Amino acid sequence: MKSHDLDIIPRDPLVLRDGRPFGQSGVATTGAFLWPRPGTVIGMVRSYIGKCRDTKYFDRPCAEHIQEIKKIRLEAFTPYLDEKQGCQLCYPAPADAIAFPVSTQDNSEMLDIKPIRPTTLDEDEGTDISHTDWMYPWINDPRKPASMPLFWRWDYMKEWLEKGSLSSSRGFSPKQLGIVSPEESERTHIAIDKKTGATEESKLFTSSGIEFSQPVGIATRIGLADEDKVPERDMAVLGADRGLVGLRWAKKRFEWPTLPRIYDDIMGLRLILRTPGLFKGGWVPEWLKPSLNGSWITAPGTDYQLRLRSACIPRWHACHGWDMSIGKNGAPKALRKMIPAGAVFFVELADPASAKEIAATLWDMSMCEDEQDIRDGFGRILVGNWLRTY
Image (cartoon, rainbow, N blue to C red; front, top):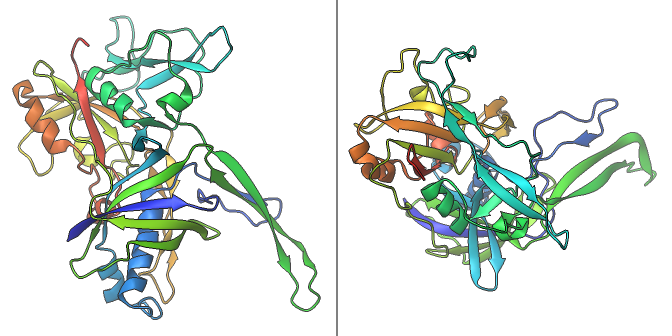
């Protein structure tokens, strides 16, 4: 396999359906994600590469062709801001951070970013969670939270990974921090009668696309077969309604971040999903699930002992799609529960002296158990410090 950076530049609004059914009586609108899932992006790339290999590659899908094209890997996937100083890579806002509004004299929108810290319960407190020594995410702040930008610039994410906090006396504007939520672009669709040229009665539905007010692109790193050849520039379609995107291939276009500073005196690490996770354990990988007696767990492919002590996990999203390996023309994939990017897992280390080595091994690995989910780009993580006085 060889790795290529692929810059995806959206031209049209992206319609990213969330799997909710529509079209029945009284349901005329389809919901939308605010950012593509890894499966959507790698699906587009595989369709494109298949056509590059042979213009008739998908005319008669066969098991051999499908299995071969599914070996193409999504090794990295994140948005970027296209600014005068260059591409600023951004990463999902961590779930262990909460934004509070800051009062300003000019009434401008400013945010105070505070961390959520795992803590133990007092003697007279308790919950129905039965895991031994489980710690509970907590923040003691009575203020009402404000909306958080979807993604943070790497400089701020790096500081959060290293210190667990952001330093600013004035706060941060949403656009200073990263990428704000996109604007919805609704389109109404109708059916035309071929004979009369008029609209058909009751055949009407609406789809929602997303458009960003900031210049946003999609930075990816793709693992291709050695024999694959791609043009430097091209066009493709992404998402529902075949939204047009530009493609720009290069061996090295983006400066992908490396592991930030890991301290010597830490007893734990924070594992933050940079892409959504699909886990056999539901909310957590099966191999990381905490045991009732709090025993240590060996991380897959390593000799490192660790255990999960706490987690900050947003509400699950639906993961679905189309599987070309089923039947003659493919079939819908079964719906799966997907843990959103930004979810944080707090793990304690059995050997704190090896924290730097463990963090380097875990950096950018996938926490998913299924090999195809790993190839599809799900479950990749960032690693930061924890269990330390910041």
